[in-house]
Image 1 (spheres, rainbow, N blue to C red):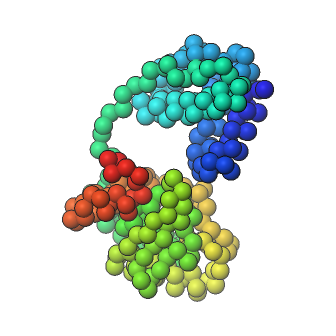
Image 2: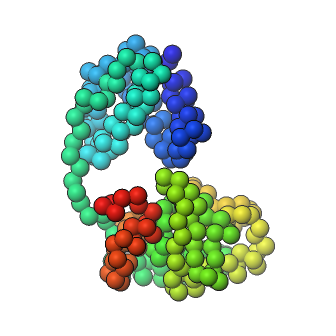
Image 3: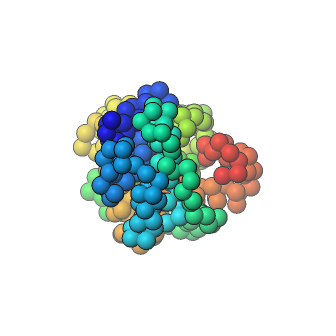
Length: 273
């Protein structure tokens, strides 16, 4: 069997049987396809530990992979080739003996409290052409900073998942297919309530909580990417969605939240994270 045919079979198995997210299966696709393209290997007969080792060496020396990128791609290859061995497409797993670099144990990047508050103020006061965008965008950034949601969790948030009356936010099937409930702070509740009024004013009825301006549909990943890039460029604040999540964690700790409760709110399986 050709490698890419097996890869599609593996990703279908991972998605429908193992319950892996699209983000995870996309990572498998990207890693394996890159190996095939760079090494010009499309058949299992040509897969060896040596050419796989060369692939990772080129990644570090020519493509400037960080240690974290190396480890992530290596994990993807290990899992894929392990499945190939189980299916008898390969006799052995060529990724098992490849040494991986040590990842530096750095604290994650974050915004300071002053930077986070300035960012929210900037998002609210940006000269939008439509009032709806002001309240929706402020609610999006408030949710990242005051609830610590991941990008996909925010985009998947349903209208019924946000309970403003009881001040709770239900994250349905987050990373690792785990549900969790988060408290909604007074600052976040204020922003969400204003957005919901605007949503009702425009008669948006789609099930997603955050919606598009022009159509009655959920806000898209491309739309969010465009919004983040625009605000980052205009505000001169260097941030990404994950940096806002780390900012939430730091603000919670500085506010006196215990590490166990924070771990549950962040959706981490291991408190060491």
